[in-house]
Length: 384
Image (tube, rainbow, N blue to C red; front, side, top):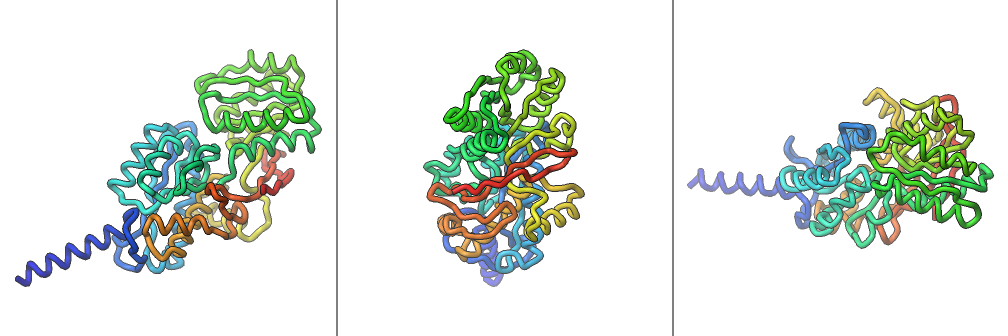
């Protein structure tokens, strides 16, 4: 009889531990415990391949935040753990990663996915699950629409595309602009549409050209663009592709200013020479003197041995925001966390963050110019 009673008690303890680390687990209160008593956050993004700097940066920023949070006592004594899976930037891989995080790892919340395309791939599944989701970096407008449990720490594609257009006209004095974008990527297309529509209100869009993900020779398209004499070319894509385009612009001796979105962050690492003098919109500036920014940069450099890009900062912020929501909710219940996320009002590395009714943040946008191979803050725009 004693053995049976002991077994039942042990099963009860194990079930309680499992519920604490799972999603939508009722009104369980975060509390301290042993090594297995943790709250797990999932992270999904490209950790290998051409776009590894993006998913890898989110993972590193999130893990740094978790380390700092745990050192300060975790969530009311309960430690948090980051479980990251490689999506390779692919929607199907992202779905597989999410299913594994939910079913095998028992995550309480999701920090991700990293890219808009892969976040959209899991959107309907996470809505059905009611999973608390805070993507650090998925900027496509559709990500949070009709998704009450999905939030983002970054601004939207239309915001940065429009900001780039306004900056081009008001600050750079551009009257003619060309757009060259990836037709197969929701992120690239979202920025392209916003830039085109905003610029066209007071200027002339000379070219609106598309390419596919596998294209690597842009000389023909660039020659067509060059013939129209635009003042600026908007290139909304990631560094692996943008670097190739900038190299070919330089090869063709095109006298034009290029401007891009936050996907350019880190362009100076491999393409500093051809990126020199060009601009991109970003979530934060490494030269920002605020203590939050500089302390984050110092801690990141100490842990990872490199300077953080904006995606690392957003991964870091998203983790802190999610933790504060769980603390505010006083529970790992999914619905309670979502309610607390909606009420977020806090300072973060990438700016002061509150969420609107769609789960989108209201925050500032930085304009970065590459000068002598480094970031120069050329302007800052407050987004209402």
